[in-house]
Length: 218
Image 1: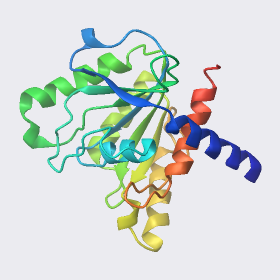
Image 2: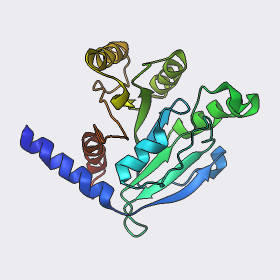
Image 3: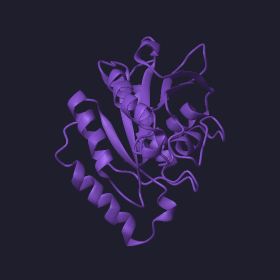
Image 4: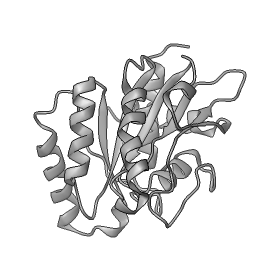
């Protein structure tokens, strides 16, 4: 088992060492890119650390814009991993949700855009739903999980900001999150702890994504 784990961590390291570039920002369904390489999407509440995690995965400080003002990501931001000649994956930074100050119009537009993206997106390999490890699942997160279950889209919870959670609280947060997922048909059962600040969990997350990418074939 350790040899297999080492294999996928190395595969993940190589995958994310490849060129990664911004491709497009999509604010309405008509702008979605045509089918291409498989897609890994990242969703979560505003200010949960999506941009920081994307930057940590790709070892780039400014691939995705990090903002201390919640609600700044208001489009589906597509990044291509693997170079323009042989792209391996698209990484999709989904709009943050749950921040009231974004405004009613943008709040209303969010579910329409996300529904359009999730509907029949054959190349979508998995949605990683990021949840702040300090706070756990909130009602607005559960609304997204309901949406993903209805769409039959594979998803996995990733706990962020693990460096700010200490001692027994870390395992308790993982256990509570896994219990909440137990009866959800589209949920992947493992709930990793990650920190963009310290790098905790980043190699393992890269390894998981490398396994998903490998399912596409060469």
